[in-house]
Length: 388
Image 1 (cartoon, rainbow, N blue to C red):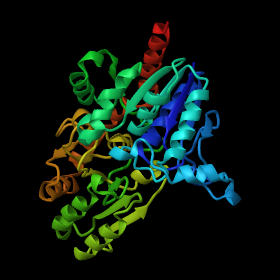
Image 2 (image 1 turned 30 degrees about the horizontal axis):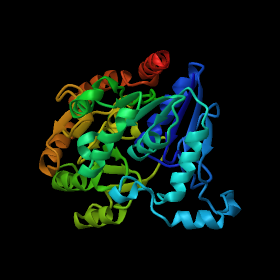
Image 3 (image 1 turned 135 degrees about the vertical axis):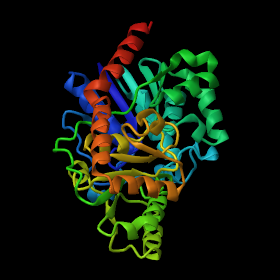
């Protein structure tokens, strides 16, 4: 099959980017022809390794012309300042959202020659619903969840997603919510989880006194909650440290909070590192304190590296991945005290760390690309066969 993924920006860091690359590489391994169309290119080198067998197409290279970016015509410069049709409801938070981006995506969707077109984010799904031509199978992937969207965005989703051949969620819980919200299109909804490759390194020996986490430094990820939780128990475990990997707008806020707790020597903002495979084995516990987590790639990534996971019990992913006290510890969301005590249990009990980590590695194996890609292939083949 010829399969094209439409993404916002393949050159950055994020869970949707990572899982799209994982899926694309697994499809290439099976012999399929895969293209990734990135709405924007903003840098010379991608943060994640892109398999050279995957063709990457950039719809708008926003780099300076001296770096290879495009020079805009006068008309394009005007359109760059005019809002997108998505902007009235704040659907697309990309800085490049504009009539110019609308035009570039529309042109691509008109010209693309592919068997299956997979759009990977709500704004892109709405682009395909409006501009996608009827000649190919169109699949809308949802990497957030329906209840997370504000009412005006949910309205757009419910009004437009019925134009797709399939709507793919990453959790069964979200799939059921879509089916109930769109009863006339319930048959379009399928759940295919995200995938994470097997960690190529030996698993952590769980002896290094480090708690690790990773993700964008934003409120969603709850790293401020982790700092507070660790601050409450740090005196009881003077040898332990916290390493937070990632970048984002809350970096300075987190640095201030770390300073308020007097933990500058023990809580480190490590910056973005890709891949993280080798970093996980330098830790003994993974903490996922998110305020919401549609799936939780980082949960599975930590499990694959052999770490026991402590996670906020937020919907939907953590509740489908983690069985409390078996392959991880679930704690009340936004509750530093409970998070701190769960971490303290693992910090003080090496045997419990090993028990939960072993169960977690078995769980992670279910999400390896070769286990998940078959679900994508079966869906695509069924949809193509059903085309008139």
